[in-house]
Image (tube, rainbow, N blue to C red; front, top):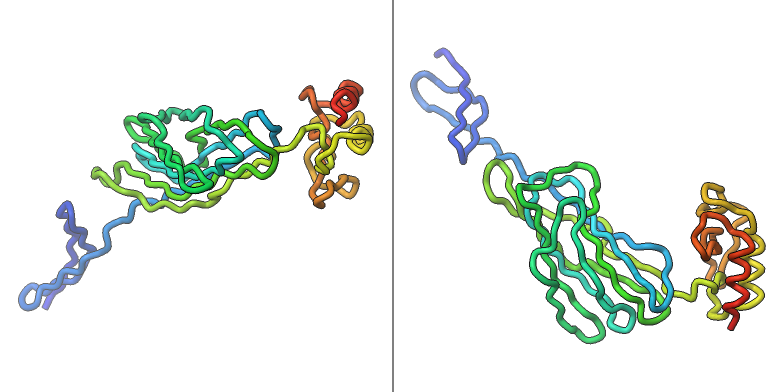
Length: 248
């Protein structure tokens, strides 16, 4: 018997080339429908903040294709943070208000972000900024507990698989003049500032661990940028004077 191959696309079902006998047992081999892409989500945070200051978290996603709606559920500790603003980035917009629920020592927040027309980007893209006010010193952590992403795939509404790559963002809330994190502002902190005197943005000591990087009381690195108290990109006499006038 002669044999031939045939490709059939019937919409919902997909068939791969398969051998048929002209007479007898005709055989169709169905192939798996292409899977919708997995969307990867992460949350990021700045290193440090001070009591009463702003603590900012950035929600990002990657490998997105025609994403229309992102539903985010997250938690923050009541004693550390109080909500301030939530805004969409890069074309995403907050849909409605954040719904807050008190759960013991934690606050749970639920928010929806929309992108009319569908968002597509393989690259990691920031889609939302969450800003809180720091209430106390310590580790201020935002934990992403659930993310649901919906959009369009193969011309049909779809719920995408989501992987939370980085589900926690933590900012250490301290007095910014307490460079060594011993809960006091004194000669030690002034000495640290003098150690980094003249260091500029772009220098290795600014934000990289080197053999000359000082350590705080917990063994963590003290970068020169932590001593740039006025944010002008250099550690100088102005920063030393700021430490001095903020002694405990």
